[in-house]
Image (tube, rainbow, N blue to C red; front, top):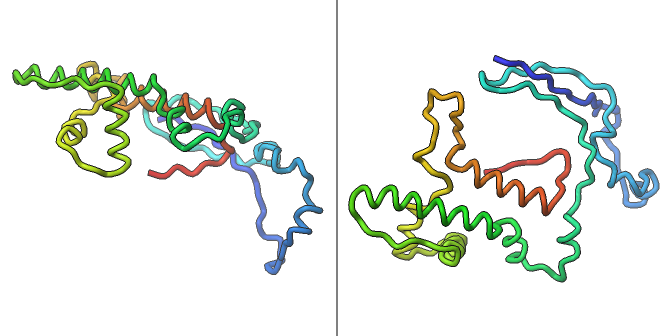
Length: 197
């Protein structure tokens, strides 16, 4: 097992006054206009050091101060009145859709040819339609088939559980990497994020 060092900022929330009221006037006068633009990592004071034990395959990790300004990417700001569909197309780019199409067709070929069944290959237009239907929660015959066959990686190449290259997220890893790339390209997040399922 490896142990990593996690640095926790020292913050004292107990100021002794439980009846603090801040008005808009107070907040405007007490904080500089640049406070919102300053990364939170630059405001931390003394730091406590914690040793955290992770899994057997983890590599040592160095935590750095978060110094990036949170904002939309400039090319999104430059878009004229973007719709939610425009933003969705930036995140689910043609590259990602092509990846889904390729691996879905590959998976169908691997499974249906094995048992001697024919199948109709999918394409980007159909995958976009499938995703739209999925978002709308409708049901169609081919929708059910795509739901059972849609794929994001080649199962044949998946390392065994005993392999040091085994990855629990193997089946979705390339998709996640491409999606992460698109999210990183479009938006610069704040230091602390909440991730929900």
